Image (tube, rainbow, N blue to C red; front, side):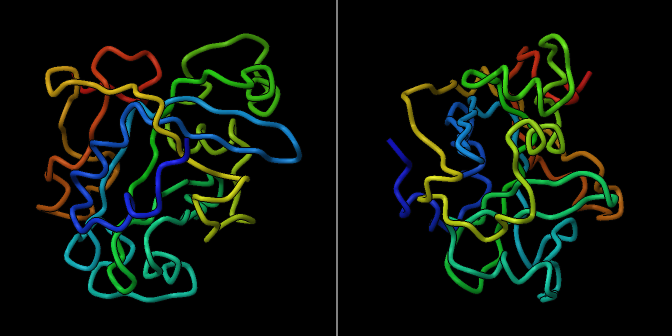
Length: 200
């Protein structure tokens, strides 16, 4: 059952981020379906968040996707190498986004292995946002696509985690954001082997 469009329209990007843990991310690319449940996310709180691409109301060809109504994918290239999948939330004009940092693969693992050029299953297959996108066949070609589409969607299958099971920590790789780099906007499932970088 796809998560309804209304789920993505809330204004609390941090709360929505946390509630995405345990939800299932699926893609159907070239007729091949892959998926798994989300185990690590980061919230980006729009124009007031120095770590966000939209900080200070920055609107560029890249960031304009973030300003659309929630419930679509914002996919961008990082370091010229990695495609990164973000879930856009909130109302039009409020550029909130949630970076999907890791999933635990459950569907189409053989396809994911092929995409990642991996002979055997290791946690690194979908640990880190670049790995999630590559294993899932996600690229900027589908930037802006609706999460109600049959290409990329998120389902609620009843899996959830208690507060005790969730780590709430600062984001990764946003040192440039100064004080905002310290905000507890990263959530992950404690002890899950697919989490990109567990805090020591």
